[in-house]
Length: 272
Image 1 (cartoon, rainbow, N blue to C red):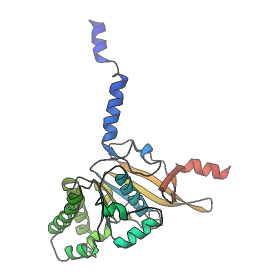
Image 2 (image 1 turned 180 degrees about the horizontal axis):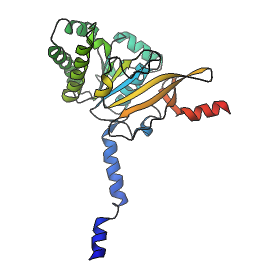
Image 3 (image 1 turned 90 degrees about the horizontal axis):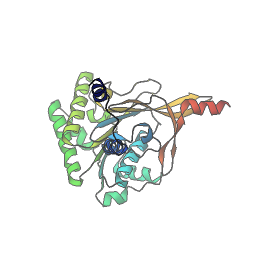
């Protein structure tokens, strides 16, 4: 009887087939980013239907990160919506071409929708109650998402959503409501980008995005050995084993952001 109790308390491990099936199920819950080298360090990708923050100072490649994420979706048959605030639709298409990325073809096939949203958002945020603003913006995004069946959404960057509002409390409450509504009503895997002041060490523009997002990917410019290196660090990723090691990355034509190796290994090679 004693031996039987011990066996019950320590059941044998599941067969290899069951373990592999569980891993496959977990992997299917994730969406690949398309960033070379990134998915390996985040268990296969981002959790589907969640919102992620890509933060960084000027020149770190936030837009390139976002576009590569969308292009990966297109490669696997996932329609996408892109909302750029710093570029027109034409400027976005032309800029992507410099990296060898064709956005016009998926746009013609109704797989990719790029929204020239600046006039709309400027109007919708003017003299309206916060709940009404959030509702109108999400309603407009939902219409575009539904029309093409989008699975991926990028807001690049998030700051213009609040226009010229200077009330910090209002801004934080607005972003909180917006992120919550996007996850609840759109169902997309969403990336929002945020530009932070150079050298500040901040994770977001308004100090609230990092708490609402399911993950934070911080892009930085790190001075090492009389040179500036672009580095990437995963600061938060819910339900994922997180490696807090900074990684060196490069921006290459066709590939976009390419993660090379951990910063400490790169520096070690520089000093050899």
